[in-house]
Image (cartoon, rainbow, N blue to C red; front, side):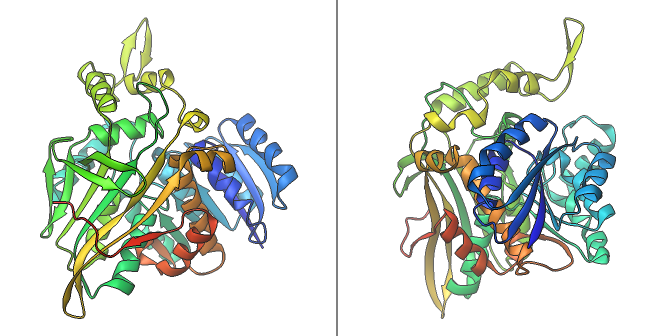
Amino acid sequence: MSKVLVIGCGGVASVAIQKCCQVSEVFTELCIASRTKSKCDALAAKLAPITKTKVTTAQVDADKVEELIALIKSYQPDLVMNIALPYQDLTIMDACLACGVNYMDTANYEPEDTDDPEWRAIYEKRCKEEGFSAYFDYSWQWAYRKKFEEAGLTALLGCGFDPGVTQAYCAYAAKHEFDTIDTVDILDCNGGDHGYAFATNFNPEINLREVSAPGSYWENGHWVEIPAMSIKREYNFDQVGEKDMYLLHHEEIESLAKNLPGVRRIRFFMTFGQSYLDHMRCLEDVGMLSTTPIQYNGQEIVPIQFLKALLPDPASLGPRTKGKTNIGCIFTGTKDGKPKTYYIYNVCDHQECYREVGSQAISYTTGVPAMCGALMMLTGKWTKPGVYTVEEFDPDPFLDALDRYGLPRSENRAPALVD
């Protein structure tokens, strides 16, 4: 029925690819491409005996538009799934436009080099105008709207769990549960234990940059920015238990603030253990989270990239991680003129994920929604020219697919609220 090109072969991409191959009637042909072709070949060999999907592989440098264009023209896919790094979103979008192919990704654009003068000037202007200073935001990709509209192509942004499923939860709540939504609290809890004193559950560069940045939230029509990790709450998560969580800036707040009219406040919280925070603060204090190149023994190195090389590969955490994740949204608002609260969430077990696809739950909870988003696009349920985030589409078929393919929803109609 369809040909799909997947760019990336890391932990999340591996999950998404395996889940695509479970739906061979839609994903009839699939090409896995990354800078390291041997990883693609190994995954293709693993899948060959167990799927009807025809899987091929290719080598590509996703930083180079001309290489991407050559690959896309050669393979002629119906959809490009960008499951590489957020640094590469724009080059892949450029290639899709040049080749007339639909596009999707799992995280919004951010630059690899935050010291680039051209980018820095635009970034500092945005900080003043918008009121938050995180390096990642949707403005760069939203600027492609007219181009995709004129080309008759769909670009789906941020179709992981958060962003992604959390936005579908918001669209679902607005469609079925509320007449008006007053507040949204997005809670991301990882109750897993991998046994290391310090490791990150996804790409260390992205993870540590995100966590160490100032926090921010949307309230009464504007951004409120706070020092990193300065707002802490405790919450008792279903099947996980009591956890400390901290307010972070997160990308879906930016799109939800535009697409949920009338919402008064949107916040994002993520759980962290004390050991993780102590290590991160120490590394930040000594400059290891810096993206600014330094000279060492006659060579130029980027401190956070060097740190990444020292830390455990997130893809290696699967066999040793135990416990569960719990990610969802708590809403307050009104229905039929009466106050209402509602909590929709998913609980995912690390060991069950590993048994199914050889991955821990962090990669699983991003890879499965990526497949389900692609499924929506390929079956015509989510197609309209332009650039969109998940909450701008009908949430019902997407959440039904998540229920079916490994991330079923749970609901609580009298949840404890976050103060």
